[in-house]
Image 1 (cartoon, one colour):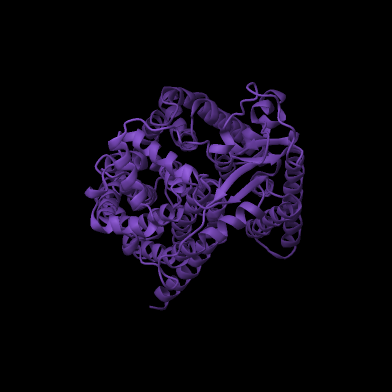
Image 2 (tube, rainbow over the protein chains, first blue to last red; image 1 turned 135 degrees about the horizontal axis):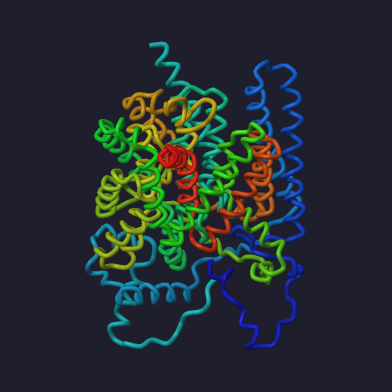
Length: 169
Length: 461
């Protein structure tokens, strides 16, 4: 979420040399995710042609031996929907996703940023001493208990903290 | 007895089919409920599946999709569905803390418990309302008008949505009059056009040089996929152990209360109940996890109530869910209809008894609990990695473009296709610019179909 919508401060510094190998000029966000516009155009054509083609062929075949027209068309629609899935599979094989998936363990800087955000919402993250024992046990298991306890302690001692937050994602 | 056994076997088979199919679809982020569940359910209705099979299919599909759509929401930080949007803030905070799997588990365990509570309570509330059924049915055109105005006002667009209803309804009426000239009566095409509107609007926008600049992106989208930790032995986790006592109590309470609300949008109820509960928990971690469990639970209970109460009590789609993803349970011409000769209703309302709704409703939730719940709990990370690395967005768009083509041509040849595109473009742009959302648009459609004829009759005499 964060990375995709962060505007690039291009005015602040000269344009960076193109570090990625992917030509970026054709990327755009459509219906909630990033696509390559050339691939999108091809995908729309493939989706339309394969699905509609499947449906029309199936309708022709079923019309031959199913007496009730509506039933034959319903079956053809079912086959047409399979055609939709087939066109999806074809496009999935032809066009790679425009996503970069990073496998990361929790970044300590993000954890601090997350804690600061939580503290900012209500003024305090609350004290671990108030927790029901089962919740405290769950947090200990996750390795979060000490993090929350020490953050709460730190804030109590020093009112202002250095900005540890970095831009996420 | 043979009849009952046959019904149960059909329901079981259809329920498993719905649960498996929609557990997989739920993993693909951005797939809208209405766009996916409604057309497939429509197909099930038209293929002549017995009523209990249709119902079990629909509910098992919906509950399963709600479970697996939590996977992209929690692990990738992208909403699996519009209904998952209110959960994103808390899920992202837990992801940044390095424990996204906790967000996922709290969400879907809350959802499962809420679903079990919501089915019997919704049936109960429906029975309380049923005596007013005849009154409601007679006054339906005016009730739809009221509901449309109310839902419009409570959408993001507020008064803009209320006023936008007028031209929108006019558009539906105009298109219907136009297609009637060629002897074509369309229903599904309007639904699909409205549901798929945001995609249609985006595809047109990206063709326009003006909008393309706004949509341009400098690089691929980056996600960080967090590691997962399994905390139970065996395949089946126990939802009662995933949530602590406070969370169980809040989730159960919120689910029970919201099972009675059937006219408000699930998203609105989800936000409100989350705020109510969140304000009462002091510690930040406990607040995050509890709000997630409660919110996802409320999403589930409101959703079930919105579909079941109008279906059992009135047989009229009087809520955003009933008008959207559950629409084919009410209206699927030529088999089910709300505007038959003499205002007659023929749909699951007339074909199933309240006891059947209760029994098969619980069966559907039970099937989803056996199929989707352990799947999402055990394989969330593998599934999220597969979808984000292998399934490109282009492929998803191709599939939906295909869906529009097949359904449009199937229902009304070229006219069907043109109606889908017209409704989609207008609806999608109104949604984006004014916040005139899909639920309001569905109510606009029903206003056009039910209220406008009554209104014309009233005025012209």
